[in-house]
Length: 183
Image (cartoon, rainbow, N blue to C red; front, side, top):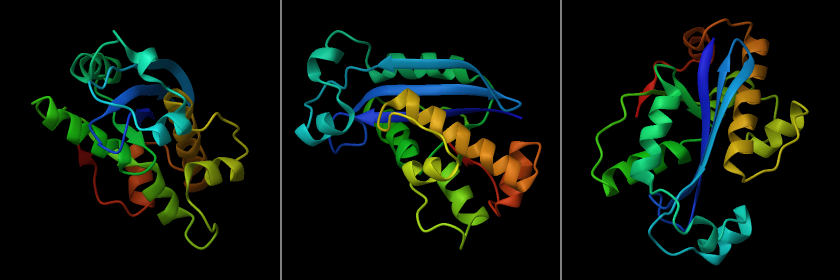
């Protein structure tokens, strides 16, 4: 089983305002590579967003913009499907691609939160990334894009163990997800 788990942090309430991107490539349950970049969002930072993720305007000054970073991310991903925890990160890509007039990335996407809700329905009271990681005993620095990507990968690993599946497609089927979303 191969996939890439990813996560964005944003500068403000605009979905296109990505200020960091973290990702991990997982092959057969092992994280084999990681990707992390700070991104200049070309917009202002909201104090609440800074409080949540700790990234400041000074840290991203002179860093590459989304349209530069997303190309490197595509190279990192290759042909693997991508996953994030909730549709938020999918929305970042869609909004930022629109903002920068970029085409669809051509990636197959799935959502670890959706799978967890479907597979563990009635077993847990919360399906937030933090709550799920507490349940599976994975400690991480929440709201750091690379750490959140690692956490989503651990959630997927736990779901594959629970469902006894060997491929992403089998996991989607076990989780009653009809197909990939497209990015």
